[in-house]
Image 1 (cartoon, rainbow, N blue to C red):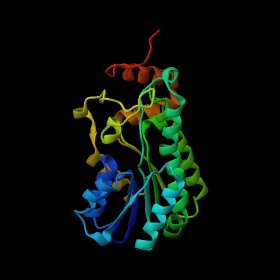
Image 2: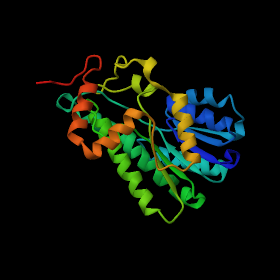
Image 3: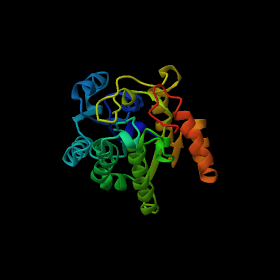
Image 4: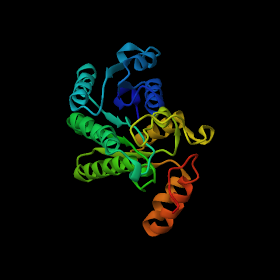
Length: 270
C-alpha cells in the first residue's frame, strides 16, 4: 500500500495505541486526522510531523456532533477519507452485582456509540474510496470477561455493528477489520473505571508482560495493508476464540480462573 496517497482518521489518538498508530502512519507518509479529547497531547504528537500532513481536532466521540465535525474537518482539509480507525475507548473493572449502571452506559457511549457516530459520518467517503473501516476491539468482544461487564458488552456491540456492515457492503469494495490486541500497556488500563465510576487507582496486571502500543499499532497497520477481516494478536486470544466455539463451558471456566488470579480480583468463588 502506498500510504503517501492515503488519508487516515484515528480516534483516541492522544495516547497509547492511537498515538502509536498515528506516529507509524505519519512516518509512512500518510495524511492523518487525529481525534481525542486532549488537544494539547495531540499537538505534542503533531509537532514532530509536517503540518500539511496532520489535522488535530478535539473530539468527544460520545457526542455525535463532535464526530461529525471531526470527519468533515478531515474531508475538507484532505479532500477524501481512505481509512477510519475507531480506536477511542475506555475500560472498567467490577462485577455486575456491584456495578453502578451508569458505568455501562458510559462505556457504551464511548466504545459503541463513538464507533457508530464516526462510522456514520465517514461512511460515504469510505465507500467512495473503497477504503478500510477498522474497529480496535478485544477478545472481550468474543468472550465475556468477568469483571469487565460493560467493556465486554460494548465490544460485543461493536462486533455486531462492524460484522453487519461487512456483509452489507460485500459487493461495494469496503474493507472491514476488527482488531483484537491482547492486554496492552496503554493509558486505557490506567483510566479504567471502577464499580462506582471512579478511575482505577492502579493496574492489576504486570505491565512488563503486556504488549506494547507500538507492537499493536504495527500489526493493525499491516492488517489494513493486507485487508484482513479479523486480527487476533495473541495465541491465548486465538485459542479462546476457537475453543469457545466448540467447548464454551470449558472456556468459561478457563477465563474465570485466569481473571480470578488478578490482583484484588472482585470475582466470587462461592
